[in-house]
Image (tube, rainbow, N blue to C red):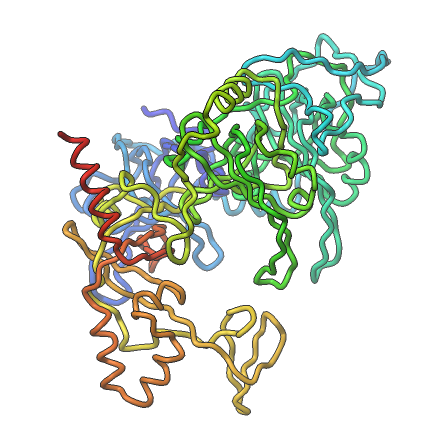
Amino acid sequence: MVALTPNAVSMLHTRQNPDGFEPWVQLIDLKKIPSASGKGGDRYRLMLSDGQHFMSGMLSSQLSTAMEDGTLSVNCFVKLKDYVGNTVQGRKILILLGIAEVQPGYERVGAPESIDKVGAAAAAAPAAAPAYQPPAQPTYVPQAAPKPTPAYNAAPAPMARNPYAAPAVNKAPVVREDPGMRISDIASLNPYSGGRWTIKARVTARAPIKNWTNARGQGKLCSVDLLDAKGGEIRATLFNDAVDAFYDRLVPNGVFYFSGGKIKMANRKFSAINNDYEVTFDTSSDIVPAAEDHAIQSVQYNFKPIGSIETVAPDSTIDMIGIVKTVGPCTELTSKAGKQLQKRDCTLVDDTLAEIKVTLWSERAQDPACDSWLDQVLAIKGCRVSDYGGRSIGTFSSTGFVTNPPLPEAARLLNWYRAGGSATATKSLSGSGGGVGGGMGSFDQRAVVNDIKERRLGYGQKPDYITVKGTVSYIKHDSGVSYQACVKCQKKVVPDVAQNYNCEKCQTVYASCENRYILSMVVQDGSGSTWASCFNDQGKIIMQGKTADEMAELKDANFNLYEGTFKAALFKTYLFRMRCKAEPHQDDVRVKSQVVSVEPINYVTESHDLLEAIAKYT
């Protein structure tokens, strides 16, 4: 009999399963659901069990044949391959998209309970996590200043010239480690570790306290980045009273014992740490100063050469090092929410003969010390790869910057730069923007439309992005092609009887509004075709410069010319940057493609790229 994956249903139900999670589960119930419209094939509802809990699921349409030919039956065991979570009428279900393996089964394993009932009971009476208790009669010793040994891929505490360095000495009393204390590795922590764990880690970064105000009241939070002796990293967050209790104690470069925290999935969009999880500490948690441990590095780098960043997936978090080639001025801009932001762009170059733009924000951008970075080596810890305008680098408030770190990589780059690298021609990965919405990447990264289906793009936890050269063969315009938007925030407005327009987001009534495109069209190439949506900026390019306001007026004034404008926009070829993401649709899953950037073809550049591509195969 197949061994069921422990806690599989719980992980799938809370959507906290890791990438590549392919659990064995048992199908303890199967039921045919006729099509609601009476058209198309039947669907199948099922119950998935791990022997302890069960949850509801649905077979996607492409797996219906597995029921009809008898491959799937009650009590059989299946190894899940592709799936996506959905919520229907307040209940979480799992839609199965692909099955890796099926084994016959004849009896139900265990006496599983509904995960929905178990989750509701747990929410009503949560169990208190046992907190770490320091050993009785601890021996207190003064905290010594850390003296990490410089080594490859490791740097000591930031140098004095770094304005963001914090005191290296932890002035609080420390606790000697009890020989019987069980220390967990950060890499072993997950939401199912329970509360019985203690880690010993160094604070490598501490973000400033952030305050917020919303309809539910006021609050504050802060975050710290932790590193242990095995090189494991995790982001820790504290809220409200926990900020008051621990913030001043958690000085950067200090070593502590941590226990009694809650592990949850990390939002990688806002985290510079290479960990799928993060931990939250509250006032019931224990954070105790520990003696200095030279086995724990002050910072751990995993540098990506600048030339390789072109192939890194957008939104990935990386470390990088390079020579600062340019430092731009600090400029001010206004966000869509009306907030004033400070921004500064720098350019970094390295011996891969590539350069890339790095954007600094807020306090970091305003710091005059940035001007002294020119022609210096800069190591950046925890920055994000963006595909806006080609490839560029974005930074977080927790991103670490160290100039001229005592690392072999820094010495090598400085020698290269002084020996003539400063005058060497380099390739910029950060284009000028090339149309609305960002760059198109390199010619080698081009895809074809059929890759969306063949490579099953969009079925991962994050959207997939591809660049295709395609032709617009159809634009749907029998219904609306635009919406009425607020002139300030661009959100949808509602007209009233007085012909004014109410914006719920701005809480303001305006005398006029702006029409903005929301087009649905077919893009095709030699491999196939796909439906794609595009919004206002991209829509203006597709419509040959005509704005949505102009098209709205034309529809009322001259319908024949209105129709002719759409016909004139057809069979034009562009470079499209598309975002692909699978989304639930009527108990099924469909991949939606959205055009995030579009450019007319530059035939001179295209010809050069084609000649280079041909030369590589000869």
